[in-house]
Image 1 (cartoon, rainbow, N blue to C red):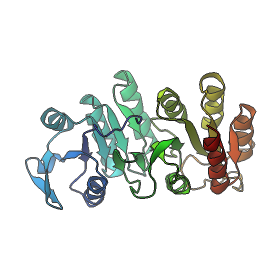
Image 2 (image 1 turned 60 degrees about the vertical axis):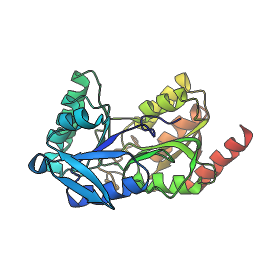
Image 3 (image 1 turned 90 degrees about the horizontal axis):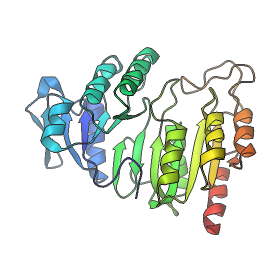
Length: 295
């Protein structure tokens, strides 16, 4: 099984006709993703050829869903247009909206996250500024390389795209049920806790890797959730042990203020509830490997 994205998922791409959207649509198709069309109001009625497969372009998300039965949208739209694109997906009540775009104003993200909540959270938002979600051997929605891991029984949730890739590669011989890159912006849709809950409920996920980073208190809140609700083994990694105070590092949300948001504080919070935390990605993979051997 997998969480949120399966081999039955039907994917549309908002921005499929743009350079990034086109490139990654081709990659998703090669990975076996069931991409059924794209959305661009200015090119509605046209089609785009991808290695011999012709995909239709629709004027709206609602039209694409009505014609294809799509239940997932991947957004490759420039930052200034992303808010409208996500709101359109929410209005169409698509089940999953994966927002790859980076550089979106925090106000815009806060708006469409709040808008989704006002609509009853029918649409799950992953991102923005994220690599997407991949269920190896089933489907791949976003920019995660499809050939770096295998299907398996580990769940992965990560703020960092590159660390998502590294962990998938490090544990490729064991494999993953689903890998979710939630993004590192100050405001995001799906959180560590959302993924932890889903993996806990997934009968084909045996253990979980959680990757965090400095800034905010998401990892501390995740630790509290793990203590109360997660019975499966969790291994953690927190990026940024050497980050200087007061300097944004990598992601817009990765900033330490005083003693708040440090990697060490997050590590302590996780270890306090029984999560084994590696000091490096490789050590984290080794800890998970030990756990999987004993399951």
